[in-house]
Length: 374
Picture 1 (cartoon, helix red, strand yellow):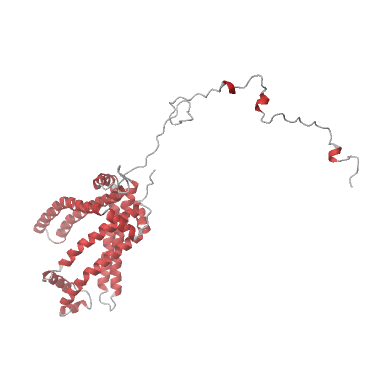
Picture 2 (cartoon, one colour; picture 1 turned 90 degrees about the horizontal axis):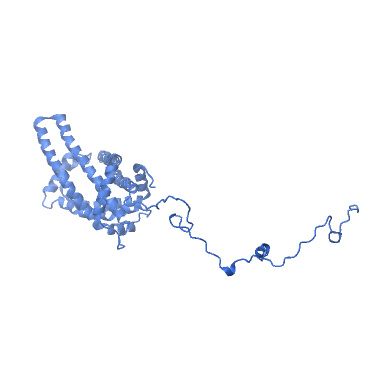
């Protein structure tokens, strides 16, 4: 019988038990960030080093010069967005290599070594590419009309309301889109978990099952049956990660005026690491939910009721007749003239028992009862 657990706590346990997976993901993301910020640093230096407006960033964080620098990067001939768009394929490559291995380690007792993560990532690479394409397609079909309706709703609100009422009315539409997007993200996360679980089983040709379509229906059934449990946890961890990033970013902005830069960098990286940790925590909770609702249930032996006499040769099939004992051949049958004791006694011609005496034999024990003890 499958043990039922709290997916929130069990997901945290899985994340902490496979903590090296979080560290490797953070290291790869940090390396990508460092690589693609070198060009950004050179572009910002070319703009800010010879500008008097940049002096306002020395004693604090001023949004005016920062926004102006960003606009000049986009309007420049070098194209500031080229580096950001070129980083997306590398990020997806890291995602396709690390996430399948992480889910595999969550579902098994395999340690989260880098070799294991990369090996499983290569095995599930094209499966996760197909899941990503399917996610983009279905999300576009569902969220596209919602975004269009949100634009129309925002225009209607701008014409008929102002102030806080207009802001709240517009915010409701964005919150609705966010909730629908979170449900889609949760569903396709479960599809990825079931895809890794399906790959651990062999088909009739003794090869792993790579059919992504077989994971779509189980993921939907699990989400529908456990929606009230899984979706609030997913939302809570999402909001927790976002709140952590906002808090650390706001604190870092207030620390920009300090002469030392490393506390600001450490605090900002701590917020990003906690955001990544909450995302892996979500993966752990989803894995826990999938383990409690597996694709393949272990087969159990059928319980057959025993009626009548039990056949000792086949106790599970009492309908079979009980075999009769094998008859003893005639030449091995005991002759009636032979006594029973002679037949059962394995020792032929035993010695007669010694006669019992009323008192001990003095020739053996040498004991004289009339002689006083010395």
